[in-house]
Length: 328
Ligand code: GDP
Image 1 (cartoon, rainbow, N blue to C red):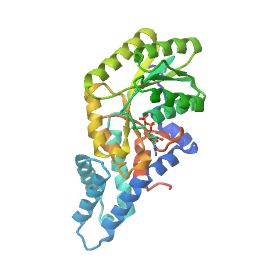
Image 2: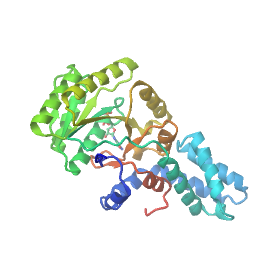
Image 3: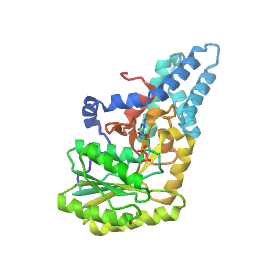
């Protein structure tokens, strides 16, 4: 079997290195708002000693729903916790959190993973998402991660609709020391990608990260634009060139995000989600909804405004960071 790229998932054997690199600490910090709220609610449910066990479980369920874990998924989680409980454990908030960590991790491991990408000479990552979602910052973070993995990177300004988008990408390119392939505002995005592929060949660049307009006014322009870019990549990228599409979503937008994700999902094939601004919300349970209810693979989590603030998704570490039973 062909070797696979390692930039998405952090496998168990890489987990120790991830810990040393501070990734899980960053994840725990990013989930502070969500965790604080969940932990407080679980504590309050248990402390209220007058209530019946079923009410403690109902309060847990409510806590999960209020963190946007999704109604069905929250019900399923509680049913599983109930099944695993031993006498007396309902009075122990820490034990309840441990049980929930296990069940959240099991649910997430059962959700669709990012499709594996074979190690190729070149990877083209198309990034879509609405304005303000954190798309440009996420592109910079993806570039930072590739650089850290020893790859050569270029950013591609194929969101030619707004001059500001091109400029913003140029600023990040300068900051990161990576080239930015661009044309003027209003030019054909596929032509910019064509230029980028030529430049990649000439300068031996292994990862092109493409900022697309990725708008969703109506499905058709988005589908057409991405299809056209896809054709250029297939034709000009050569045989040994892989392509993936990542959707950036803004975690602070709450429920709207799930609806938006569904609309994008109906319009174009999405390989994975980058959930940005997770640090700015107490609704981090949304990751569970995306993975379980929408069956969308979660690839990366954005946990801050800096280029280092990107964490590859790992089910177990996410569950631990969400419920705070690991090292703080
Ligand atoms: P775009 O319009 O979709 O390209 O969005 P930007 O990348 O310009 O981001 C919009 C705002 O969100 C900027 O102020 C970013 O600094 C901020 N932002 C992006 N990602 C994150 C994140 O993961 N955490 C936080 N706290 N802010 C973020």
